[in-house]
Amino acid sequence: MSVVSEFRRTTGKRGAAGTARGVTGRGEGKVAAVFLAPWFLGLFLITIGPMVMSLYLSFTEYRLLKPPTWIGLENYTRMFEDPRLLNSLKVTFTYVLTAVPLQLIVALGLAMLLDRGLRGLSFYRSVFYLPSLLGGSVAVAILWRQVFGAEGLVNAFLALFGVQGKGWVSDPDTALWTLVALHVWTFGAPMIIFLAGLRQIPEMYYEAASIDGAGKVRQFRSITIPLLTPIIFFNLVLQVIGAFQSFTQAFVVSGGTGGPADSTMFYTLYLYQKGFTALQMGYASAMAWLLVLIVAAMTALNFLASKYWVFYGDD
Image (cartoon, rainbow, N blue to C red; front, side, top):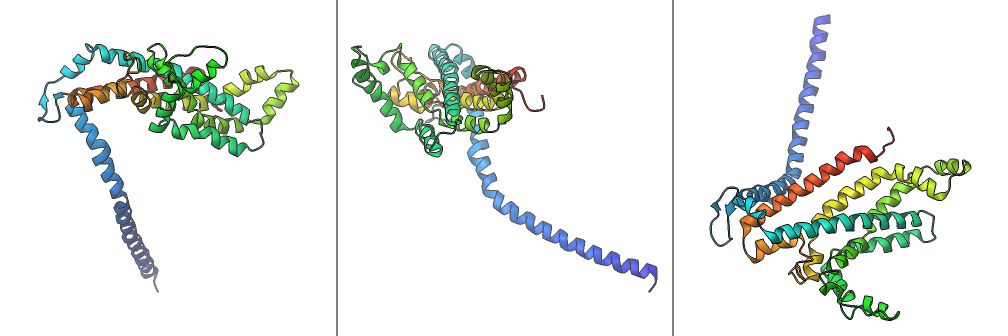
């Protein structure tokens, strides 16, 4: 057999094997496309489609019962002249800027307590995580309204010390702070993440610091906080985004009115009122896109600021 004929025979076998692999690859690609089709269908019909439609409606006058009418930027300019919308932004920012830091402080404190190696750790971890699962539910919001009512548990506790309570959820000065307390109470999710981060800090750092004479407070400031900053940043971003979208608590506690005196009028609650009570869907769509921009801006601000206080292992 000549060298030329042997080369042709070998090349032919490789070509046949490559063709077989190509056919198999195309077959696997078709199977993958079939399995991914429902996901892509849901992505376009349930997510992208409604988003594009709401963006279009934000430039229209649409009251649900009549076809939308194009009005350009009128909905957006109208928002800056709406005193209730501006008040809802004030209430929402107050809620976010107070509830999120307090929640993270409580979550970190409890995570450090659980990190000390308590007996029955898995039980306590499950119990503390439970409020995060229930905190956004209607049932807990109703319970919260009863707890802070005129005859609720809070006033019953204060009565033991001779303090005269009041209707905390019916007072404009305190109604929002009951919702802040409810948000702080749902510390379970960030607590679990903090606990996982604490478990990743090598114990030898604390041992070396103890040998050098550093106390617990100094160790917390110089070791725990710097090494935990990526986890703090992660929790901060998630909780800020979630706090801006809070709705159920304010809706249930205020009976859907945002009262008393609009003190619990979250931005999402006012958006709901405009869209599904007043049927001003075009205006509500513009409000929704403003919320998207606000959340995006706050997230971008957190990422920009993280360069100055978040420390990673390669820094």
